[in-house]
Image 1: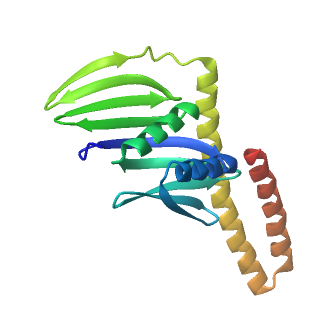
Image 2: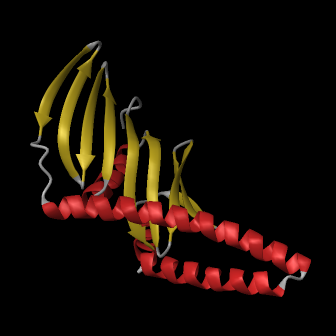
Image 3: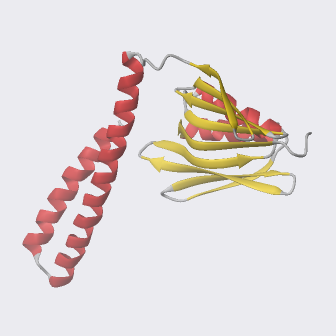
Length: 198
């Protein structure tokens, strides 16, 4: 393997369900990787050992789904290949930077497809490929729904935290009327969260 091999994944976004994550763990183990994982109510972390380096993949829980997002630097060719296959299969988004000698290749990937490829050498850059940026209706709907649902989840999470705080205060002060109102609002928030997860 080329020791200077390096790929950087910026603004990576992939969505998984729990079954996909379990299959991922099996595939990585079968591929010979040493790994371990941990989980809490917010995040599922898979730590993959590549040589002396430990790569931690953070899967953020979003209802019944998980989202692998953020920036990652991968120095293992097989692991990078595996990640790129996932981006294609799951129609993910990323900006991929491949470092080779004194050159950088930058791929912009949207819905699992390369839409722009740029070669950077020193201060010069050359566009090797650029796709017509017209999105079809299905892609626009996918993008809108994913962003809209995410914003709604964040808003509901804030409301949930606020309502739980109010309920705690009402219970502490013995205010039954306020605590019942809080419980009713919490039920409504729960129903909305369940609808978003569905």
